[in-house]
Image 1 (cartoon, rainbow, N blue to C red):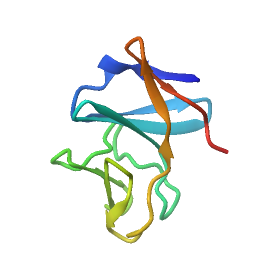
Image 2: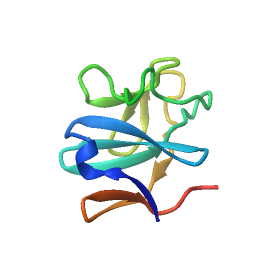
Image 3: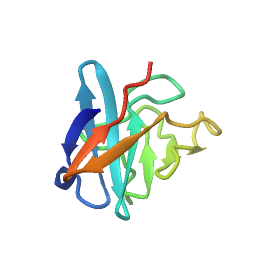
Amino acid sequence: MHLLCRLDDIPEGQAKGCEIGDFKCFIVHKEGVIYAYQNRCPHLGVEMEWMPDQFLDSEGCLIQCSMHGALFKIEDGQCISGPCIGDQLTRLECVVKDEHIYLNSIPD
């Protein structure tokens, strides 16, 4: 397991980018649930945020790609608007233990 951050580093309704070596991911804290995704848009392969830790749309309801504005559901990473409709973000398995968030493994 790989330590990403403390649970209280991500307030409810917010997101945070994390790095493990060269691997980049982000975490969203929504309604008490932690969601983790690889920081890579399925359309162009670019990183998702437009500023550090800015992964969500202005309402905080969807994940938004900074490059072309594609919108993804937080719960499953499915693209619902933009050039990659039908694609989805790469979801990562994480676990919360002792108030810390851990990534189970880094995908190949």
